[in-house]
Length: 129
Image (cartoon, rainbow, N blue to C red):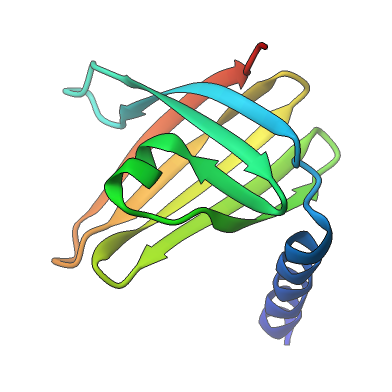
């Protein structure tokens, strides 16, 4: 029963964000993304923009993903958020993170069609200007 309630509240949050915008609307973030694991030392720059209840992730748009609705909630120590990028021709990607004042951090999970899962950590701050 708890799972059904969780799904219901997630759906309500997404509907509200689509109609009125979400709690992170009007913010932009510069982050560094690095694959998790000992042998992965390089990182790449990425920009996340939250506007109109949707998340626009520059690098993901370049790969062919459309801006996606995001789910965000106050967790007492900031704002937790999830962005699910899905496209029939591309692997599903989920950005899960936490914002505390001017800092952002989280994990990107990519589920390849062959069953492999890749995880990337991201950290950054509010975009200036």
